[in-house]
Image (cartoon, rainbow, N blue to C red):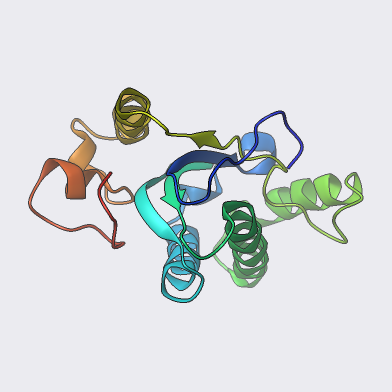
Length: 182
């Protein structure tokens, strides 16, 4: 993590943001979003990730997470490492990806200019963890997260966006991932 933001107590929910290098809109394709979702599911089932809220936008994600059994920074490392490898492999194999050469060149350039990578860099290095240690801070970040697709003009209402936990908070239905309400 290369910022002034630091993870606090892992059992307390944290708001996290991480973005694709160059703000490339990789997640405009459903197949790449599914890879990221599977990474989150794996960490929920096997690594103690407690997911309170989430959203996948076209070029970044926001999560509200905690863990009673693992360090948040280790979970983020694993999520980013696994998802980046899987998404880049999917881009390479995707015969219908019109932006394949452009994206791979950008990820390769970013990777070669970062000593922490061998070939490609998919995610920006930082993830800006913010400890949600008050009810007002939790509500502010939760609203910000769920309103993201509305502000972007993708949907009229937050719960209409498929790749988000908004449906779990605004309706009696359940979304794509199991969550633990704040």
